[in-house]
Every structure is written in C-alpha cells, then in structure tokens.
Image (cartoon, rainbow, N blue to C red; front, side, top):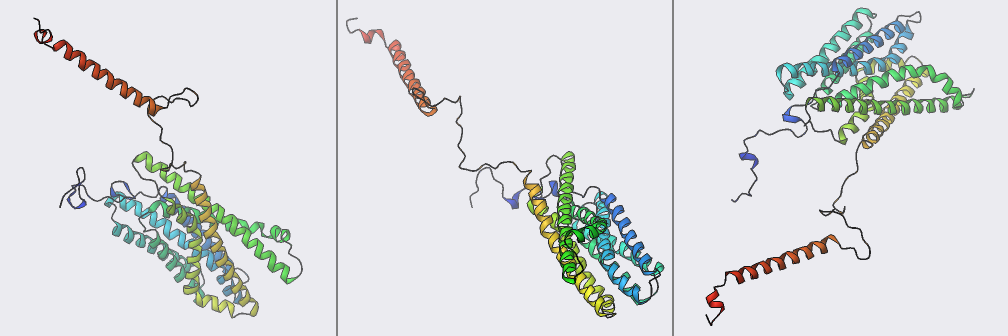
Length: 378
C-alpha cells in the first residue's frame, strides 16, 4: 500500500497519542479549588447549624418533623456542592503528586465526597436530637456529598469548578433573596384572596429563578474565562474550551438543584411522608414546595445556559468563509477609466519579459555568428 508523502500513519508515529482537549495529554486543573472547598464547607456548616436551631427551637415536638422537611432541601443542596468542591481540591492535589490518571482522580473524588458526607452525618447525629428524622437527614446528606464528589471526578475540571462556583453563588443568592419576598408579594398584587396569594407566589418564584439563572450563567462564564487566562499563562498552547463547556457550566447549577430534588425524594422520602401526614395543609405545602423546587431548577437550567452561551458568543471574533474575496499580492489599483487591473498588468509584464528574452536571444545569436559564414565573399 502506498503512502502519501509528508504524512505518517497513526500506527507508525513515534509520538504518543495526545488528548485534543488538553495540552500534552494532561487535563487542566480547576483554579481556586481550595478556596471553593472552604467556602462550600462553610456554607454546609451554616445550613446544618440553621437547621439544628430551627428543630431545637421552642416550637419543637410534632412541628420539628415539618421543620426538618422544610430544611432538608437546603442541607442536601449544600452537601452536594460541598462534596464536589472538596473533591475538586483533592483531585488537584492528587494530580500534582501522582500524575493525572483518570481512574485515580475519580477514586480520589469519591473518597473526598465520602469524607465530607461522613463528617456531616457525624455532626448531625451528635448535635441533633436522636430521632428517626435525624437519621434520615444524616443519611441523605452523606449520600448527597458522595454524589457531588463523583461529579467532580470528571476530566474537565474547569467546567466542574465553574458549576460549583455558580451553584454556590446561586444558593447564597436564594437565601439572601428571602428578605425581598414580602415587598415582591405586594408588588405582584398579593391580596386577601387565596388566588391572589398563589399568583403572587408564582411570580415571586419565577423572578427568583430568573435572577438566580442570570447570576449562575455570569459566574460560570467568569470562572471559565479566569481559568482560561491562568492556563494560557502557564502554557500558551493550551486549547480553548468549546461552547459545550460553557453550556454545561451555565446549566450546571440548575442541574444540581434537580439532582438534589431527586436525592430528597428518594433518600428523604420517609421524612416527607411524615411531614405530609401531619395535616392536609402540610400535605399541600410539601407538594407545592416540591413543584416549586422543580420549576426553579428547570428555569435555572435554561436561563443559566443561555446566559453563559451569550456571554461566550460575545467574545468570539468574525468568522472567515470560503466566499470571502481573496486579495491579490501587490499594490491595489483603483478601478476607473484608464485603470489597469492587476491580472492584466501581470499578463502584460509577462509578455514584455518574453519579448525581451527573445530579443536578447536574437542579439546573442547575431554576435556569436562566424564572420566567415556571414560574408560569403570573404
């Protein structure tokens, strides 16, 4: 079989195969992972402390079950983000010491998530009342942290870091937004009727989801831009992430919220059933809150992804197609009467050069002719 000149088959190449997404086959680490881990662990500790204060307040007893069910989503979301952030930091440490093996990184990420989950479950069992609801919260929190660690085991660490950053920012915003709920209820026409309250709550929830999605998309884009600049300073040949990475980073916080809802409904099912069985009002409240959390997650997925893609698209330059005119070499000549086109000028110059060559050849032959042959009389 013939080979084309200048090409080396992949099987016969002396260079090892290199991952196209990473320079030299080594994945790019997530910058600032240690700071993200500290912030996420601090947020998880704050959620656990606030839940404990709510359960052990003066309104304990049967109300503690309802309060535990209300506080469970915040704890699970915080554990999911804390497990992923800690796994990212641990993965960077393993990469610096033992290389960038995908298997080692994934196993280390799961191990870091397990450590976070076990620590959170131990803190819950030691500080909360020893009840069946406490065990449910502890077990579900540990599972969420392990799942978050497994997510951080992905090879594209900067994208995971962007998801963690955006999710943490969105969680903090949701808690801060609770202070603006009452003015927004009045703004959206909440009155004395039940229907007006339901409509106002729906618009407040949509406003919260819209702003949280915008914030998540901007944070994800900002983190990926920062990671790109750091990678270029270390290695100018580092390839840029393509648009799917920005799409995933923007949609990641919403996807994490939807994943947290799945964990809540599977691991914390018994707690939700106990809270719903207290009264008809509690059952309606739990159903309404669950539907609202799902809607918020879906809104954040689309708004965050769209925001990150628009921000990424604004950084792209104009693309060049095959239909673009090709500029000829040499000085440009303006069109108009008497103007000579470059192609015609080149042809004229070529003809002139040919005539000059022929004239030189004729003159050379005339000089080299033997004088005896030129004059028969001599």
